[in-house]
Length: 352
Figure 1 (spheres, rainbow, N blue to C red):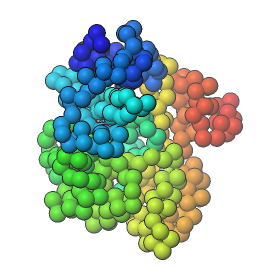
Figure 2 (tube, one colour; figure 1 turned 90 degrees about the vertical axis):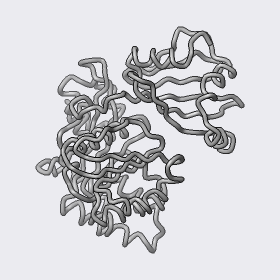
Figure 3 (cartoon, rainbow, N blue to C red; figure 1 turned 135 degrees about the horizontal axis):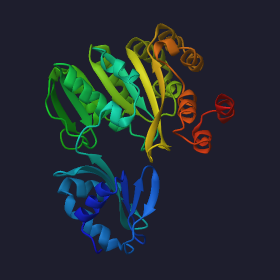
């Protein structure tokens, strides 16, 4: 390989790329504003990828890669930022997916996020979910919320991440960042003990199993503000996913817990911004209003979309309404909007 790994990281920053992929048999590939570009570099050999990434691993991470075939970790570079790295095997060779995490935590204005989300950060307790697919900026949105709290309140904030991405400095708040795998074996294990560490705000990098979801609900129920991410394409789907993780005999209790603690669910996707050749988020926002809580408690989640659609006075709106607004503002083209819409026919009528 003609370039060192640090040379390629510098290139990612210079080109303002979000991701870079290393696969044997192809040149490195970067993503800029959501679009893929092949670098004008020689094709990588398996030994190129191994030489670049294996020296970054400690013994624990090497063992995990050999045992599981995948390992996630992050590294920092002065004046550049951090890089979240996934190493994995494919066709008996090593590949790497690298996400650039900027040095400075972005603001809501930087991310083009609506100020509605900040209302959720002002709650002293409860559960706030940031949802969406992979690579849509959930971690970045949560980091912006944490930084807002960090600057606004004298709190004790504890983040549980796998791996650590943005690094926070202490401002009005004290921020502890615990990396799963290094500082605690799992999200659920860390959550079981975190309430003894006197936190005001707890960030859970991802809710993906029954134990983590259960512990997060309990933490929210006992007076903490819990920020968590999970994979779902809509607010109502997020509710169903949480409930469906539990066995049938526990679902009534979980619905009550969720209804009592939910402050809001933000679902986001990223679209190409025609005005500055960057990315702009489209957001679905569900707030924990009495009607929302009642629908969750009474197992009537099929009503949530209608409640959101008619809840603009509470700052609620569906994903397609957000996409439609971006089209009308000239920020997103119609073809991409219709491709990403949950109901393309309804969006077509909306935008005319």
